[in-house]
Image (cartoon, rainbow, N blue to C red; front, side, top):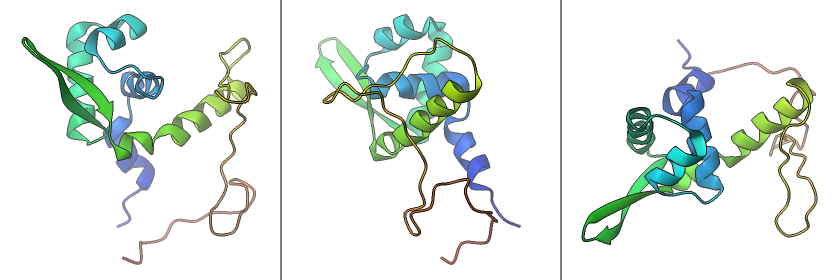
Length: 138
């Protein structure tokens, strides 16, 4: 039986709060109170979601104060690797979920980012060719 990569990914970061935490982490937020204030999330829910993201190795805890001990949450390589997923979800939302949504802008050029998915092997835009799933060759 094939293991669906979408299902596996959703096990790690599949709920809305987790994705919003990752969005905020990519925007530079690292501390519990920053996330709580940005999201308006209940502290117990935030604690649970941050713990799940750490367990999934998408975020890592890092001590930023020894006395008293305080931790912040930083993106791991897997967390940084999630940015294109967030960008593609945002682009999909722009096209399909209404008007007046925030836009992602390039920090250097000031131009709006318009992400597309491209197959690194063929260079073809994702969705332009039929797809099928097969067992990994590993």
